[in-house]
Image 1 (cartoon, helix red, strand yellow):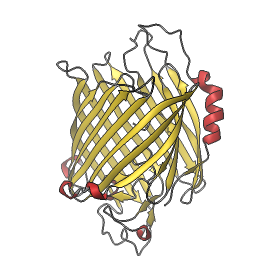
Image 2 (cartoon, one colour):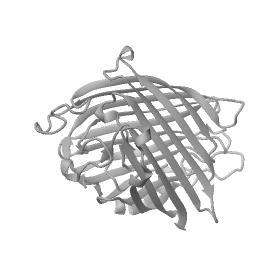
Image 3 (cartoon, rainbow, N blue to C red):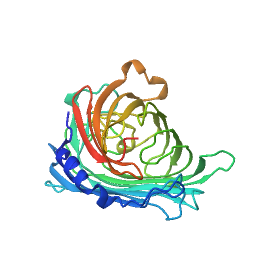
Image 4 (cartoon, one colour):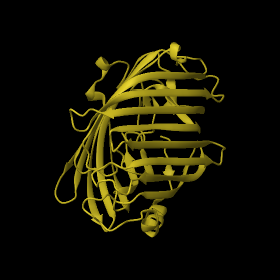
Length: 369
């Protein structure tokens, strides 16, 4: 199994410990006033067989008005830029803005990448020997704007747009992708409009210890909107956080993602990655429907250091009726946290996840969910 061999553990300890106060300017704690804005920058270094050595920079900006109440969620911008010795690169920005004192939320995602990926086929039982490597050039855009529903505290509803533009570099002429067995194995675009409902009662955006975050979304991709493919994408993301003894927290999450119609390869639901099913390469298994659940126990260790242990189970299928929990893949692991901002609870995160075929090491900012 191809996986990132991340070399940032020493950076996690030395860089984070040495710069915590530099990037997280704090004001004296006042019960009715929120912490000051925070700015975090950290290096990214890793090596994979597909990329060789890769390096870049990532960071997080948390923005607060000086007169904002402590319970108000801060706006934020997460960013990353990576380049590799094999001339691959990726740039991403993830903004989230709370407007009008939290009356509405504008958030989304932008990424441009030329990066390698592995394809093993479609379905939950594809063999390791079926692996093909391909490199898509991909622009991904997502924008959501939701408004507070005053009748229910924490409830928002609104609209969303999702667009993707992609083409693949040349790949194995004898493989499934070259034979065009899979829709979207070449070039194309998607463009979809939809709706979203979001419920948020978390006590913190970055490190919640109580409350819930539930999001339901759907968008229709159609030729009328400029899409090369006609399909409906639906996703449910349900998260809850439970305080335990002391500052320890139990976090649980369940997701269901489905593509109905003819979705291109890159837009099919994918199992794995640095958030859900850590330990599996993202896209090792992909199909029309994905369901997965995970639980994470978060606990303090010493000073600003914390620890986590987690476990997850999930699977993919060609339809919702074909999802079989008895065939779910299992993942588990542990991780370290370093609190870079004591005011907002922003953490540096290093996780080691284990799956059926191998393991993965993940180094980033913020919690997995």
